[in-house]
Amino acid sequence: MNSNVNDELRQRVERRRRQRSGHTAETIVAAVYMATGHRILGRRFKTPVGEIDLIAIRRNRVAFIEVKKRQRTEDAEDAITLTMRRRVRRAADLWLARNPQYQEHEIGFDLVFVLPWRFPIIMRDAL
Image (cartoon, rainbow, N blue to C red):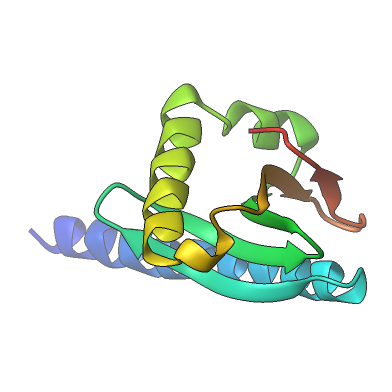
């Protein structure tokens, strides 16, 4: 019984640590996008069909951005699944439906890898 409680507590602590780490990575990526002239329109946009980490605009392009923080590039690449791509696209469709003023803009789906001791790797239109 006591072992189960300890395991559950450890899992909860680890989940919170990963969540904070992911939020930090999103903040870093938002700063990079802002430094390149983007305006952040949304962060952690949650819908019943999925979530978008960041939404940014620059000129006539709205970017829906998925951030993956991992220790190695290979691990970040492995996290990009067909299910994840569909989730982001469905959430983007919902966001655009709720924000019709952006429907005529160019739409992009960017993927950003945040790795230790490296500048974030930004891949435009990668999803």
